[in-house]
Amino acid sequence: MFQALHRSVGVISKPMRGSPPSPFPLPPKGGRGFGLFGRRAAHSLPLVLALLLPSLALAQEDFFAGKSMTMLCPSGAGAGYDFYARILAKHLPRFIPGNPQMVVRNMPGGGGVTMSNHLYNLAPKDGTTIAVMDQTVLLNEFLQEGINYKTANFTWIGRLAPALGLVMLYHTAPIHSLAEMKDQEIIFASSGKGSQTYMIPTLMRTLLGYKTRVVMGYEGAAQIYLAMERGEVQARTGTIEALLAGHPDWVETGKIRILAELSLEPQPSLPGLPMLTQLARNPDDRAVLDFIASFTALGFPYAAPPGIPPERARILRRAFDRAVASPELIAEMKRSSMTVGPATGEAMQELTARYSQLSPELLARTKRALEW
Image (tube, one colour):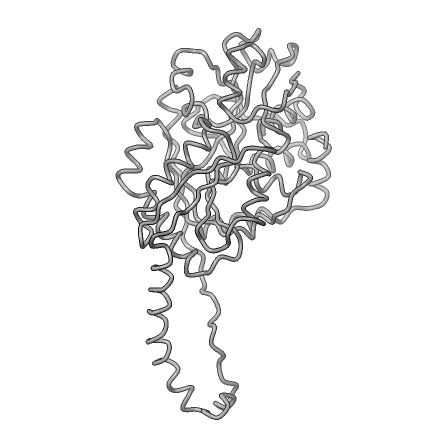
């Protein structure tokens, strides 16, 4: 089972169609409207563009030379997000013109909300700051208080891997199966209400009837696993990547048992594992669970602030595409037993825009189920 957990492969989506509008005005019908220069200016415009645009593109590429870039991370050191921040910070600069340096800055808090607010409002909008985003960044926009961003307005750079929400039980817990949780209360650890580590066990109780209790305040996976070892908590929800980043041997040795998954569709790598979405007792509850499960489509994505120059966004996206396809990054991911399932920045931009369309009725039901 341990080896099967790493076989899922994401889909590389095609870039969005279309191109940005031209910054140069076109003449009205009849060829007039270019002031004193008239039609001659219109006829010379292609030549001007041919001479100017390569220089503009070269200037954008030169921008990164000698720069120090920042990779923000929504968790503390040692967590799954920290792994994804550091592996891209290591490989991405090789594919950015000018080969800038990149440092990782951990910014835990609020289940990723602290970092997302910072990236959106305070980080430089020049392309020198990017972040590995919390998987629940979109959910938090609709469900959390203190949100000062619009998910669809971030400049999405790409996704390195999809995600899968797992219900993981420590071996000292007094139960051995999901069914036993109907009668025995299990304590789950969480980093905060904005995290899936709060959302999933809470919905298991309010919608599915399991006896779960959530203890919040842990700053990432490393603290959660330490709390398990100390006996403070008995379970957590999260991705297999987060587990492998800190304790790659826990599945094989039986220290962790995986009881269920939260995803939009069954995963071939986990045959026979109960799907929480399929345990819903009515269509309204299923809709709430499906909405929360949408974080698995975002997976481990990267974004920059809104409003960075379009040409720099293009440079970062194409550098990302090359980095995640490089043999060096793939080999390092394989050595760490991590999955690779990339998607382009354009695909992530389209996905976040689509999932941002949420009905008021579903939003109200979701908030009630999460007890917000």
